[in-house]
Image 1 (cartoon, one colour):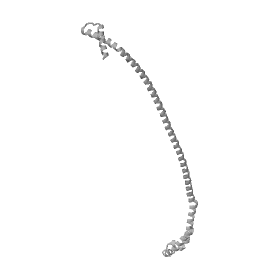
Image 2 (cartoon, one colour; image 1 turned 180 degrees about the vertical axis):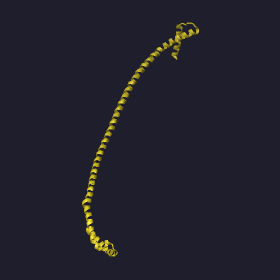
Image 3 (tube, rainbow, N blue to C red; image 1 turned 60 degrees about the vertical axis):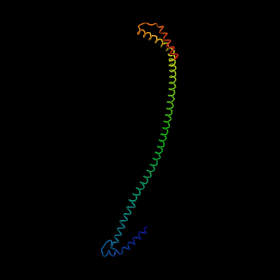
Image 4 (tube, helix red, strand yellow; image 1 turned 135 degrees about the horizontal axis):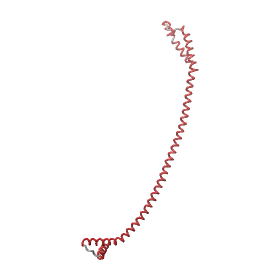
Length: 192
């Protein structure tokens, strides 16, 4: 690479000879050969100092900064990967907890439902038994009323008839004759 730079410099030197001769006549001091030595001296000094400053001070600082940033980026990547793994583990743990909670809730619901259905069935059975008892009692009472009702109806009919006749005619009628008439009418109704 250094050789390429020297070759290019010499090529530029030889090409610029025409310009130098033109400059001597025109008076450009940069192209005047008597000033070249001093110009090359200060060029070497300036670029030498610039090279030393860059290579010893600035470039090491830049290199250190790049290394620091690279190590910081790697640490951040490692930390991010670690946190991602932890968050995935936590997410799986939460998913397991949610799944377990759903299963527990479903089991609890099924147990409560079964218990409630058993309780309803027991109460329904007790209620049906009580209704059957009450129905038997009511049926017995109805049968007893059926048996006793003709006698009571006849008695009421006799009393009412006696009162009606007494109020209409003003005469007290014998209960035995009214009883015979009511008994005759009720026996005819029974046969119908």
